[in-house]
Image (cartoon, rainbow, N blue to C red):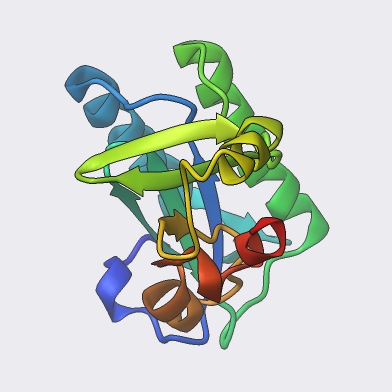
Length: 160
């Protein structure tokens, strides 16, 4: 069951998929339509899941699930991953590679491999003040508070 993102409680589980490039406007429309269709019918053992999504910075797909009524199961999580994989294939884009880092450079969202990010740390091209995206947050509340933070407040700090 698709609902508005803002209506989900802060305890809702989130999955964040970062793209290796910015979506075009046409891709955004198609991805939003696809997410609407997928989440409208998303279920666990035949029971509707109360879910929502948002796309941030034309680059991050955030799916949220209110687990207070029904939780995701292995099969329903697999279905969501298959949906994301279909987007990767259709748009020739990486969404599931967790070994990459996104961070802000002014108004621009940069995307680097973890290896390149570590090199940038050594070169002092990024610092503890650099705003990074912590895609490891698990709930909507954490997403709202700790997703877009200075590197000093994220797992990225271990490389500084």
